[in-house]
Amino acid sequence: MESPITVSGRIGNAPSALKVPVDIKHTYRGDLQVDLIAPDGTAYRLKSTATGLFGDSADNVIATYTVNASSETANGTWKLRVRDAASGDTGFIDSWSLQF
Image (cartoon, rainbow, N blue to C red):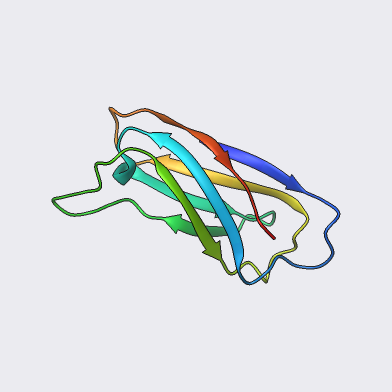
């Protein structure tokens, strides 16, 4: 699943410490891979799937990630892309934002 945010009216590039607060509702967060997609298509990994015998079986991803996006133009459509690596669980992107 993907969720877009369009940024306009900013001058220059995104900051080196771009904050990305996310609230993803899901019944097994260890299955989730979360990426921030810049306007030019570059992917920034925010969260990888949990691996190993004891994955992260808790619900929901509620966190703020920091990305060095200083090589990206601030203006344009940014996307939060969430991939569920397993079947049997459900979820959705409740909210997310970019804090410049």
